[in-house]
Image (cartoon, rainbow, N blue to C red; front, side, top):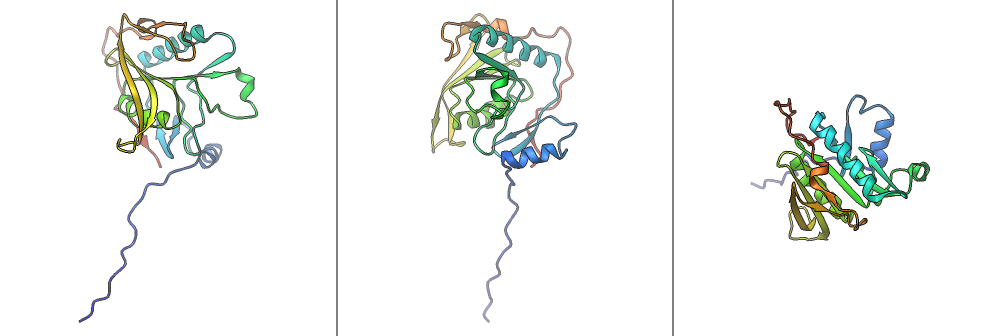
Length: 216
């Protein structure tokens, strides 16, 4: 007896969004009451912020302002554009120019330095976000790791087909308190790790579970 082959329906697949689709959804109120960002087509729900994270963002941003000086804008938790499917909101991003330079052109596309302050998002920041920043040639990417109390400096983004994420940083250094680093675009301005690391809380802090949830 001849049995005809049965065509199986396609299985579930991930729906990736473009920046244009993401912006339209935001305008239509899809994300009201949520903090979200677009990472390689995935809409990521960001974690709640507690005081060590808030302090780390402020300390890192102020250090970047001192290091770069006039002619640069240090953005805090504001969007940047990377390709057609990524619109992350890094904790700190340094771009050329001033606030008014991007009114018509939209979110900046070529950050000189990105700093993510990381506690519950450490896996995301080391993994998917590091791969994204490497893919779009962000030359200087720092993770202020407030769990292990170190600054993780990522440089030399490369395309490596053998790597799981295809893109990563060839040079990664973990700097401890007592060490310092100068941004690639401000080589004369050394920033002590201790200056941007928030102090350890004297009492246990409530912490959300690790996040990196995708809503799309």
